[in-house]
Length: 291
Ligand code: GLU
Image (cartoon, rainbow, N blue to C red; front, side, top):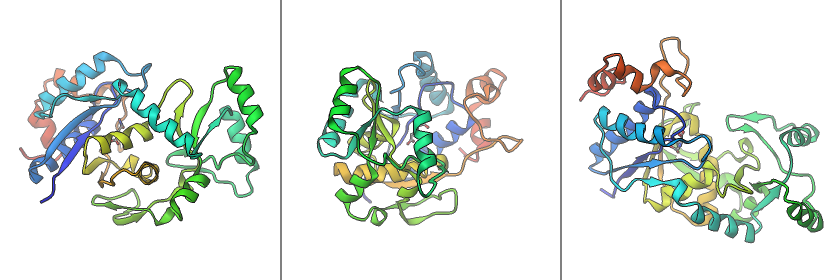
C-alpha cells in the first residue's frame, strides 16, 4: 500500500471542542488503520486571534484524549516567507491581483453584476472587477500605503489551467450534498478569493494547500464545512504544480439541540468536560470510537 499520511490542523483561536475531537480522532484512527502517519499542524497565521495558551491547550487536550503525533509540529506562523514566495510567483504570472476595495465596495460591485453571483458556503462570491485597475492607479495607491488584498483571478486561473471544471479530486468521504468519488471542482461557488493581504502573506487557503503538499499529506481528513474550500485548494495545486491528495470530508458533530459546535460553545470544550469529570474513554465512546 502506498504511504498514508494524514493530519489534524487546528487553529489555536480557542479551546478544542467535541467537533475538533471528532476530526482529530477520525484522522488518527485512519492513520492507525492504514499503518500510516498522523501529523498535527498548528494553523496560526492569524497572529491576533491565535494565542499561545490555546496552542498549549491543543497539545494537552489531544494527549489527554489518547492521541500521539509526530514532532516537530509545523506551525504556520514560522513559515510566512515560504507563503510570500508563492504569492510573488503567482503575482509574477498575473494569476492574482491587488484589490483595494472595501467590503462595501465589493458588495456594490456584486450588486451591479449582470448575473447576481450571490453567496456560497465560502461567503460572498466576488466575480472580480469589471475592468482591471490601471497601472498608474495601482502604483498611486501602493505609494499612498493603502491596504489591499491579493485575490486569485478566476479568469486568469481558467486561462492558465484550461477549463477549470475539468479539475477533479477524489472524495472518499462525503460532501454536504452527498458528493463522493471523482468530484469536479465548482469554481462558480468561489469567485476571486483572497489569498493574502498587504500585511499578512497568506490566507488559510494558500497555507493549507502548500503545507499539505510540503508535508507529503496523502489524505486530507476534515469536516464537511471545508468541502467547498477544496475547489480553491485544487486550483492552487494546479497552478503551483502540487500533488493532489485524496479527500475525506466527514459529517459535522452537533449537540443535543442539533446545533453545530462552535468555538463559542464553552460548555462543550474538552477542557470543561474534563473538569466536570469526563474521562477520555467517555468522550471517545460518545463520538463513536470504540477503543
Ligand atoms: N485550520 C482549519 C480549521 O481550524 C482546518 C484546516 C483543514 O483541515 O484543512 O478549521
